[in-house]
Length: 380
Ligand SMILES: [Zn+2]
Image (tube, rainbow, N blue to C red):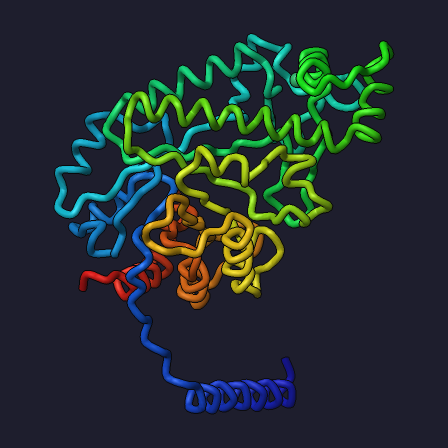
């Protein structure tokens, strides 16, 4: 760099510095965070936060009163160990309902079929399973019963309960499935719609054409009936434990109605069996990195849709899971409190953060979360 260039560069730096200083002087002092007594759950998703224990601190020191861990890692010993601590967290478990790909190794007939009648390749590796495969359903229900019985947990969250699709991105990949012989036979039997005896591609064209609304409702009903059975099991094995679901944050009109037509999620029908809806408004991942307000807008829309206001005595609760870890776009530490602010607005009565496994490597964000959680809790 020549001398003139150096001088110009210094001048720019000084101006930038002055600008920043002026901005700092003019900035409003940060508003104190108000208590939010209606927020009953301040959670962390994605593992036991042992890094907090390693520092000689407690979850309560961080304002955390609930954790979500994988169904494979929950044991009676772990729950006992966590419960023995002072102010123990409520322990929830997530359960893989519709993407247990390992099942397909020995059961290739459970692979979802596309509209061409062939095996539908998993979009971006997201492998789903045919929802009417009786062996798969039995396998999942037995596994669910084992998880619920294994330890005194506070509840189980379905993850994810929808048809094969890769939707966790700004431009989702949503194939039409499942057109296997079993699904087509059940569709005809249960809707009394008789399809002509012709090859699957021709039948699929009819289904996605004149029978689309009956097909959409039938698929939704299949997935809802799984939720009914999960509810039955939880009521038998651990009455009082909650049944929740991590679900796609779209409204019924987003992406041309894909929530129902592609994912086969009928939230209103599932509401008969679910206690908690954990909408997943991962703003940075889904193309809203600079707009955390999208989180509270999606949550508010869900509340209007389900008729949930966020009052303490409502049967159905909405606890969003909000994104603090970098995925898609990065989330700066300066945005953490804003994200949590939007995640804890009515009708939400609880919140959890995604995802401890990577969040703990950014302790500055953990500290920001801590400040927010401690500030909003009603008991201090
Ligand atoms: Zn099928």
